[in-house]
Image 1: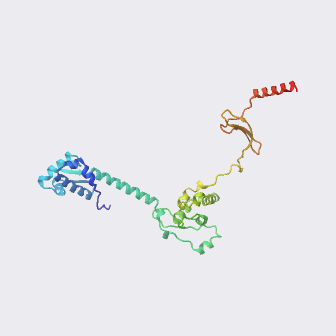
Image 2: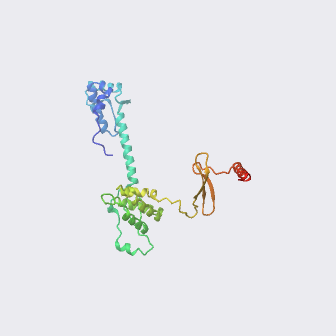
Image 3: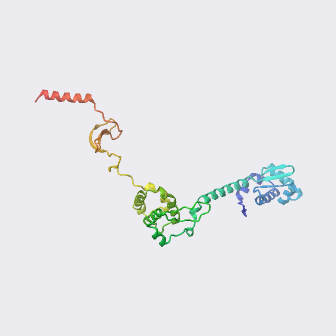
Length: 307
């Protein structure tokens, strides 16, 4: 593993550290030398050796080293252990930051390995010659475009996927620079996802997007990103237009008022189904027989009373 040539030194932290500032100047000088040795050591943040070896690394005289080491231990400037004459001095912060750096490098390596084909240059694409594409248009065999990749399966593009990609590239709106960005990434996406695409829905979603207010106002999403969310642009079905297996309910007359303040609306379908419910709380309409009998009695009494 290649080593970094320098480490970050924060003057404010050095001056504000009470343990370091409480030490003698000779101890502080020895400590900064030890920090540099820890950075260059095989196990970053740790340095090990006999007392005389560490004294030489710290740049101290014989009469300076023992008081400096005792002060480093008493002020807890570093973690110091002594086992069988071998002294180990460790800097907690340097060890922690080195561990974080290694973890970050590992995450980036895994990300690059996973998405390596997304950053391949267009030079790695094997172009289709005009003669081969024209001659194979009448053939049922698939034409594939292979891409050189490292440790990843090669994505392939069939004739149908190639045709859909070309139609998409032609119809997709351009930004202010009039450039179609990420053509290589889009080709890989079509090669991997074509078998999951319903072409009529895909083209309808593309037409809806190109006519949207967002595109009209000049805000164009990058093609690769739009492909990830193209299903969000599929037009929703019109409820007034019947489709196979679905009945459409139409409004009829209003039959009265509901207790919630809404109105009882009559609904019916072309197949003859009917229902009446409140538009607000969806409570079913029920006929009050007592009120009907009372109204009928009033009508009978009016008829009997005569003019």
